[in-house]
Length: 324
Ligand SMILES: Nc1ncnc2c1ncn2[C@@H]1O[C@H](COP(=O)(O)OP(=O)(O)O)[C@@H](O)[C@H]1O
Ligand SMILES: [Mg+2]
Image: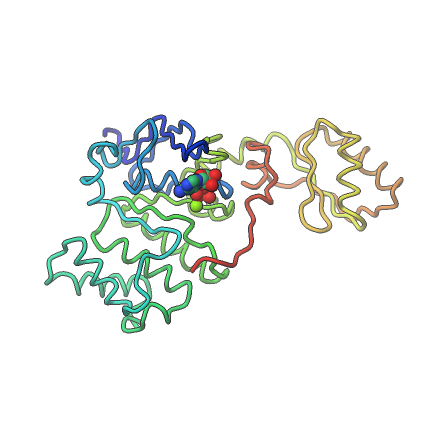
């Protein structure tokens, strides 16, 4: 593969019976980047990762991973990729270091190098002082970090991470993101799936937005946001019933996208400001709603997502529990 392309998907498609999980997707990932696969639950992120890492076969189409065709040469590709699945594949009853040593053996790392490599990774991931703790006794964040360390044991060129921060608290998620960011400095290409808009924005060099198995946009976070830039996003903070305000505005401005953003805020995407102000203040007066403030806000990736997909951003924000 020339031009430093490490993953190239061509019309990749996966049916589970009647369900079309991945629908003719095409994309390229350049060496050394963090590539984000952003989409709501059920979009096809895990299915794509499973196909690219040889755990599942595409129904049609193919992909090249490190210049190996996944349909015919997956074993060769597998030697140089690491995978961190949604649920950890490590052993509860083994210590942190024993998990890594076990992985090292699976990957055929020579016996005399295993311990050095394992200890090095434990240090990088801030887990050295917990090396003898059983996996089951580590915190969620530590478990996730160790699972990533284990996937790096054979020094892969590409690391696939499937929703790495799901179920972590804010602090653990942040520290994990820093670790992921560091991988790029080491020249490792990261393919990361997420349903957190902010995470994709912070971490990724490029983002593919996946909805119902299809890629609806693919670009840098900056360019994705620029799509909404010419058009202002106007945000009203109100005292009163947000749903009533949204409904009333939708009737007055049927062509515009109007959404509740939090319990007392309403966002209006694009449109002529004076028209929006007129409609909003007339409505507020009629309904006895107090407008506390109006802001023209800088578009976030969330705004771009709404515009590109037509989906409510709430589909991307699910509860943070679960996972391990
Ligand atoms: N093993 C399976 N059998 C049947 N349907 C599946 C299977 N795995 C995933 N699906 C379906 O394929 C679609 C994509 O799922 P998935 O790739 O897990 O999405 P994501 O990871 O983005 O949440 C969903 O509709 C899901 O229900
Ligand atoms: Mg998934």
